[in-house]
Image (cartoon, rainbow, N blue to C red; front, side):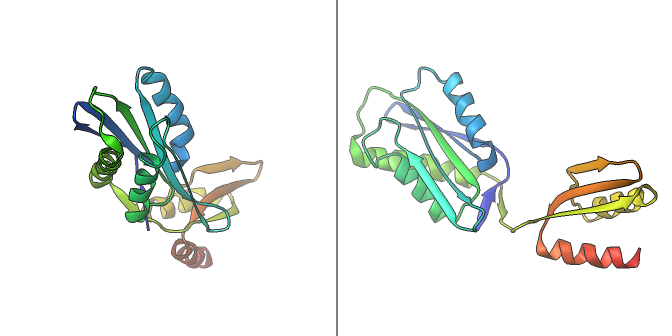
Length: 187
């Protein structure tokens, strides 16, 4: 399985209709859809689909046709996400109608090809499940832990500085956790 690394955009034209597709991490979906709706007030349709893993490790997928004939836009977009084995990823396509009707088959092909193009252009990451961990260190060891995480290229997004200790919170893969536990044993 794969996931989007960052926001990627492509433009695709079919019979004078312009399709602008955006592939992005699912965590940014709600913010991105609001931004695109504000930026593209004259767009005829803003179609989206997404797939993500829920807390039970189940893949949740959803899509919308946004006024296009039922099943002609959102479903083909979602099918491209499935076919590319993408999770924790959203795909949004903004369509400006060019005056020539595409028919249902033409719309399915147009939305599918727009999704394919943005997926091909995107930098995709192999999905690795990460687990939350939390631990405390004395101030005297903070530099050693920072050095370890920088050397292993592991981000430490949350630290709380207390009176005598630092509390670290992060998400690590199983392999990173095992390696980290080895590091802690030699301290």
